[in-house]
Image 1 (cartoon, rainbow, N blue to C red):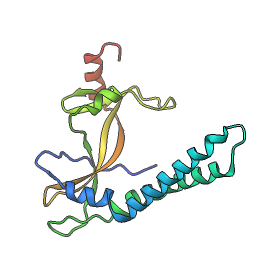
Image 2: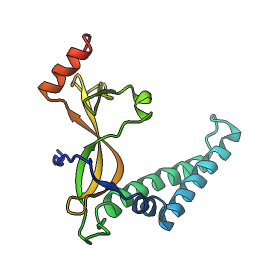
Image 3: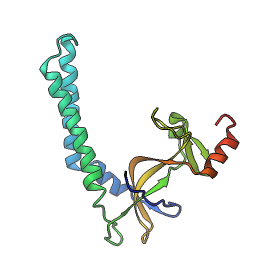
Image 4: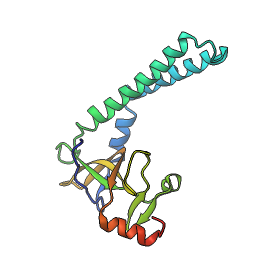
Length: 173
């Protein structure tokens, strides 16, 4: 079971977009993006013979694509974001979960907003919760009031009060 991260209200915090860009578009990540793209292209190129005679090149391309994805995941979330330091105080930024900002993204996942928080039904069919609260992983420095968005979804169980609000707003909930 994973540890529960503390929540943080990002009101008044400054988002460090330059630091985010340096992480997502570092030279190593660009190289691995290119390797994964080349693997996917090689895989599709080997489809010209059809799926009946699956060539070995398809497995090589698919392996490159999957390996680059796994490497990027480990690089970003196991290394770069964990060792992120605040540019203001040079202290390591702490992990938190925060509510999403309002935006057009919620139409695609059918999220419902109540009081600045976003809710939806669970994604997995094995999830027995009736509703979940959508949040995101961030790294923040409470002293300098800065944060970096890690672009990872966090699903949290709704409290009884939140479920009551959802049932009041949506009678079929």
